[in-house]
Length: 102
Image (cartoon, rainbow, N blue to C red; front, side, top):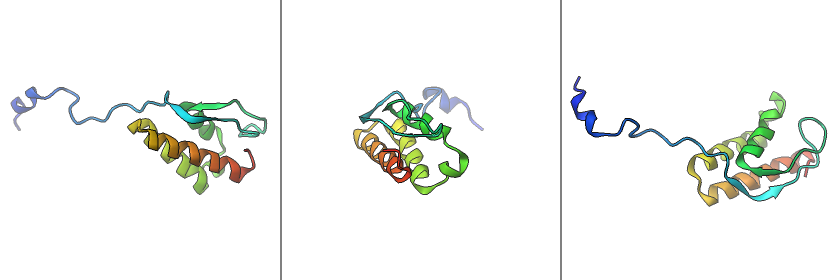
C-alpha cells in the first residue's frame, strides 16, 4: 500500500459536505396539528420540517408520504439546490394534508 500519493489530496477529498438543515423552505408551512396533537410551530427551515417528522410516532413516520418527505428533506439539505428544497417543501405539505394537518 502506498500512502505517499494521497499526500497531494486534501484530507477530506471525496467526502460529502455536511447537510445544511438551516436552509429556508421555499415557503413557511403552518401545520394545524402535529405529533403532539396541538397546532405546532411554523415550519420555516429544513431543520424545522425534519424535526417535525422526527417527532412523529414510528408507525406514522413509516407511512410512504412521510418517508418520502424525510428523504427529500435530507436530499435538499445535502444539495442545497432550490429545486430540491421546493420538492421537500411540497412533499411536506402533501404529507400534512394527508394527515389533515394543513
